[in-house]
Image (tube, rainbow over all chains, first blue to last red; front, side):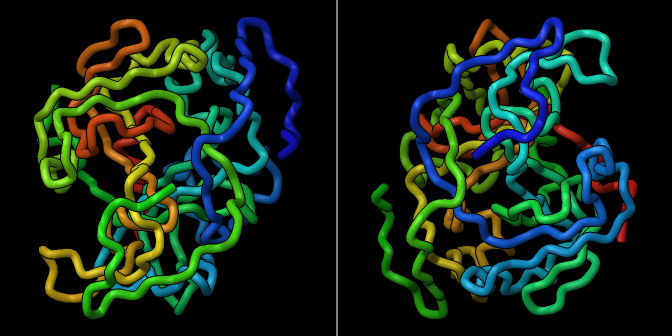
Length: 157
Length: 157
């Protein structure tokens, strides 16, 4: 997979060499349709967007949708297929100081998995309408889970 | 990868044949240490647990931790390496009716990614102490993101 973004490191950024092989494999289980055709059109996070987006779940995996209407909100996981995976310390344009990939929700990370909590608006067969996504049109879907609003809350530090 | 759980379908469950090849690859970026040594020891969700758990981030990816102390809670993504991936409709013991994998937070799903929102308790170099995890000891880590408590909230349906 070729990263299409400029791979030149900015001042203060740190890149690494990735391992020679993968440890596990993902299946793309669907495709996400959004109004965002270019990287610069994407909102910084799904929470900043009211845009209606459509999730198509592929036929092979459609049985797994049984009963989803019982939940109002989903954790949508997707594969940021055009993201660089090598930049561990980054200097996003909106921040003055360098930050690690794990201290950011940047798409640039060793495993470029995107995650948004999305209100479910409509279900029509294998097609779901949701709000709250921030990704490019055509982004591959990798998982859908009922959102656990209070996950971790009971166990504050 | 061999699934160790009984692959016999219960009455009302639906299994599928998976695609012949993967669409993307993951790197394991660390290891999660929990007090849960057997599947039956795991809490149903991390929100049900006060247990302190340790996340070791591998040396290669440690630079990506820069600045994580700025956040109180993280979305921890992990690979449920012992889960079956073929059962699309499931009958969990605690539910009377069959449900799709995408309507459940069950570990059994086409891409067995676990997700918990975890309060960060302590950082010591590459080792993080957190609460709110539900996974087996030795589970591979695949991502860490600052938790976005209100993701999707602004955009209710």
